[in-house]
Length: 115
Image (cartoon, rainbow, N blue to C red):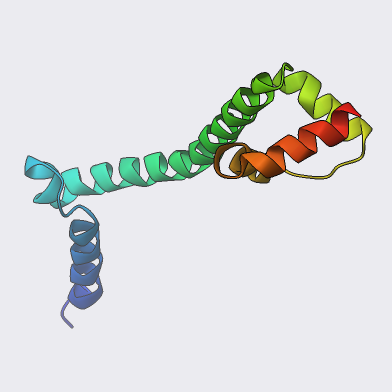
């Protein structure tokens, strides 16, 4: 009885890896063994990048809130402390959006927490 190699699924697996490696430079997109390593590395970069994106956006939001709060003479940390003292539950994403795109609303929030 001849040896079964399961060529269809092996070829499918290799084609899938080479499809993921499309656009990579040189042998990284042509040679299966090299492409496999490159694709694994790219997946790990993608995974960590999705985590890093969250950190980067939070940092951006904090910078925007800080810039908006300093217009009214207080730092970010003081602004956030006064918000929590007044029991206002607005997240950083909305606060940064208010400070950038809706300064009137942000001013009302600042006036409310100062009073």
